[in-house]
Image (cartoon, rainbow over all chains, first blue to last red; front, side, top):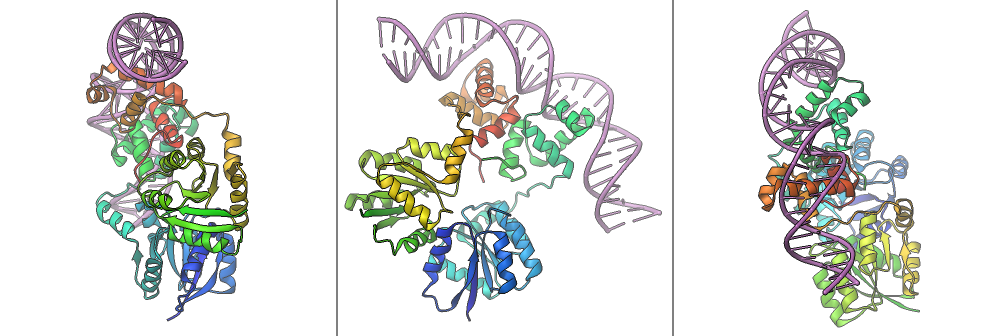
Length: 209
Length: 209
DNA sequence: ATTAATATCCCCTTTTCAGGGGATTTTTTT
DNA sequence: AAAAAAATCCCCTGAAAAGGGGATATTAAT
């Protein structure tokens, strides 16, 4: 069974590497590649592949959002997330967005081919590392924060006092304190300093880098 | 002038991609590749390349440390850091460790070749993004923390109180408070919550993920 | 040996936060 | 419409942090 493969990744050397690794595989047909989400969507109008290897960090849109969009418009296309990050939150988000797999960029040629075959047959592929990560951390649920809680958390992490935050959000200080308490409970921290770190680790908060 | 090129990266598709992109370049000779620091060092005993493209996140040792080690043992080998991260701290550390350049994995074939030529001629290559980053943020020096400050910072971020930290480190609470004040000053934060986020952004603190 | 940097520790005051309790109103979900 | 969730706001208390000042001892660099 031939698999038409498409790659979305702004890392040319990754695209070229996969092409090269798979060039002698007769069951895999090169469908194309795109360096960002927009080009990918434009290409899919012309020709639908069977499987997309999709980098999760694209320059113009997250792979997670692109995955959702592709699955809505082209439900039969299967998607494998591709990343250097072995983080549960990314893995979960990709799977929840409709991806059929998650592969790290350290995958060997054999692993790539194996993943493609599993996914083409309707299965779900997780790299060894990804599977391991989900196994050990599956008992620690990531808390669900309300919209307001997220706002307050961000401002706490920016170093604002309760009074500052109240002014910023046009609230009473009491309200902010309540949100802060709820955040501490949900995130499982004893104080705000510790909570900021945990929130970042749980991907509840993003950092500039 | 022929350049003997060696690559250190655990991402097979990256290695293969670069090989494939450069296969028709007559001035570039394939010296070899290694998937981690140990294999790299073993290969260098046998044959010295002119330039090493070195991933900064290796499985067994950071590229920064490997860079230092290689420059000490083989001063004539030139090193270009290779990464998906465009972060000032990584760039600075690689350059300080003796690297002659920093390249992102989104580099085109032309950019790779250009980088190799510049570095082979004794210059320093920075990708556009890296150069841009250093330009705009060059006025914000990353603070240098003392050994003790780093210890205290870590424990603050773990959510410990001053008293807890003092007990942990066998110090007076006053001492911990002094370190905490100095950290706030150095990192430019108004309180501990904000400081934790800034410290992570400035790569003064690492997070589990 | 001298100087500079780091580490250690203290005083005081004020501000801020965290813990515990409570409630009503508004919005969303069923 | 009813129930659930979110948002809002308050009371009190004590703990903790932040701001300002100071100092000496130890270690590292010159």
